[in-house]
Length: 390
Image (cartoon, rainbow, N blue to C red; front, side):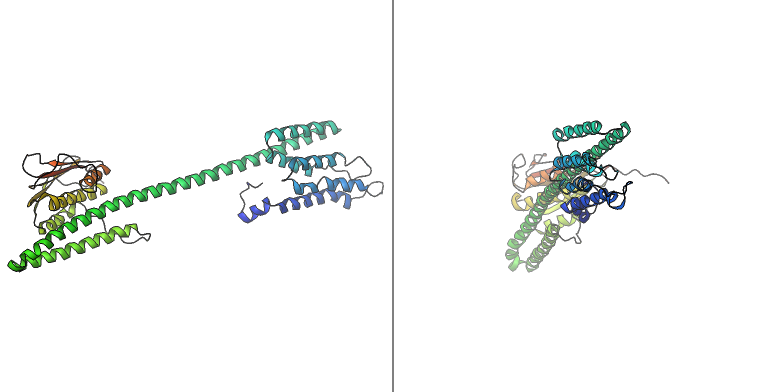
């Protein structure tokens, strides 16, 4: 009965010992009522044994959860001995027996409930005089046993579903935590890229400022202005990224994409590196992650030009192919090795970002054998939208 879809307070009441005590009192009142409110045909009072047997066949139900088999045997014994004396009110004492049999079928293991059930059926057939009464008794026993097994199955299924729900909730939380960790790792890489790029530009401008302070004051003022602008931009981007890590939902500025590359090249140019940006082919839509990846790849490549290449010129070329955007960043600096490094947050981030959105990236000496270094990436382009004529 605990598997019934009831509200929690009612469920707790049904599952408590008080509900069994109340059930025992109700059944006892039903079995005693013929003895209390009916009179015998002979006019004699009912025999005292009838009251004892009716109470003895009902009140043990108060302990049916603690000792279901013992309660069934006691109730059945009093029911069989009810009419050994005379006079007693004509009635079957089956109510308590059926409830106790339901409890045995619901709570006991198969090795206990099956012999008890078969024994009850055998005793009932052997002690009842008429075939009609015996048939009704067996049918009632089978029904009570079947209801008990159905209740046990319902409880078992509810327990399995509850366990499954707990497991799925745990897996969902674990998946959310893993996704959050991956997102925080991506944000950390973004923060590194932004800060490394901006600080590199600020350092170059700060070093050039004092040199030009006496000979070219206007150039020195421009350098210091570029330092301030780059610092403010870095702080703005850092605030946006840190905002993603907060629990509160707020307005989030979109991440930079391919359309923001001209502004990026102008900032790098203010650091003393001449940057040329060229586009080949017809620009097409990029997936959101590929757009951010394209910007960050160019940003990282130009940052390395400023920090390590000792170059004075760089070129950013975007080649729009059928289903691919090719990004080529070259410089005329001192060059480097032939492969991407195996670790760190520098050029390795270029490879990771390209791979994360289904692309590839390489870095090394320029393919045209000229002095310098190049970073090449291939990112997938979103399929063209097909319009439907109205």
